[in-house]
Image 1 (tube, rainbow, N blue to C red):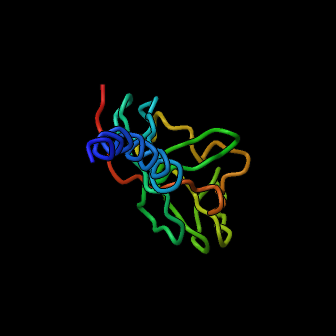
Image 2 (image 1 turned 45 degrees about the vertical axis):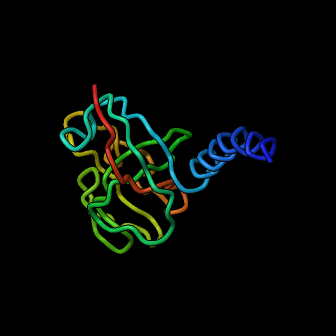
Image 3 (image 1 turned 45 degrees about the horizontal axis):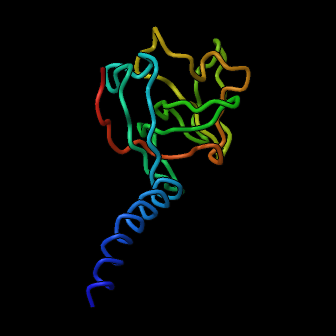
Length: 135
């Protein structure tokens, strides 16, 4: 009987570690905010916890997405069907896409500066759920 308890006590941390690993590969994402582009919502140096959810996002949601091979964290400013002013031209956001802006307009590389300003919904990785801390 003692051997079974000993074996279980050694296996429990391994099972817990595997469970955490699986959760961060499928449900959560831990990120780092390197710039002030989302200040004051997210300070440079902040850690963020995102939830990998799929579905519809709304204007105002802060999301993590892939653009040009990099991960960004920005706020959804417009969704498919909305009209935005982009470089002095009214443009309609295509269905299934978003127009992204940083909260700190003076220090944010976002849809306003990209050749292709619309972010497909398929490139959204997660919705930011919780800022964990800053510098």
